[in-house]
Length: 159
Length: 159
Image (cartoon, rainbow over all chains, first blue to last red; front, side, top):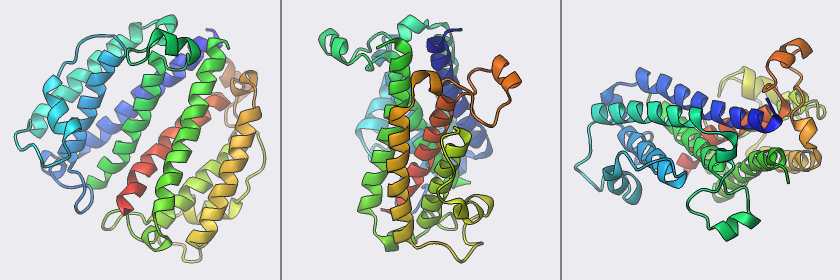
């Protein structure tokens, strides 16, 4: 294994480890607990779970790895803050989407080659990418792992 | 720049970006706000700041890049939970330690070569490392960036 392959492995392992860690916490939380605010006046657990699914859904498009699975989550969980859209999926429905999405992302990531990881994502032009080669698909995983950890630190407060 | 160098750059950029992001939030929080709990019955902001400094201090030892700067923070901010040790530094003192530490880590990271990043950290034996080469210094930065983001998601709740 080259150091480049090793570096990709480390990044993907951290993504998978972060998903596993949040899953452990989600399993320990009841649907009722996820309806609570993480702190007085702050986002509810259900909003953060929907937000994570919506953000990860957009990774597919950014990494040119497929279409969004749940485009309907953009409006209530990214565009709008919590409690604005009243018609949202139930916690049980979000848990099912989350599980399905994780399986799919894990399968796609496992078959992505190192060369593909270092190719440009869809939000950067070929010209920009030639000057800024760090704007690649692997970097999407790095930044979204940070985002996932940030909200995991909030979701654990529900317990 | 090789893809390996690029991957190292992406990881270190994410560390520096995460530190910058927390600094932005810390600047916006008063010393009084950092005395508050992030949610009722949970850790105080001052504890999380001390905890981050203590954990980052231990990175120096793990990466064989120097001695701990603030060994006195281990007991109150890692070994013990919040509110057990009553004699702790003030928020102002912790802010100064945090700034000094970030400057030092940034300087050390900037001069670390790619080969050094992929060398083993001090908590793994040479034999284990030969089978598990991902247990290197760069992986310490990857996992500690996750940890930093997790607690940043909590500290922002004080605002």
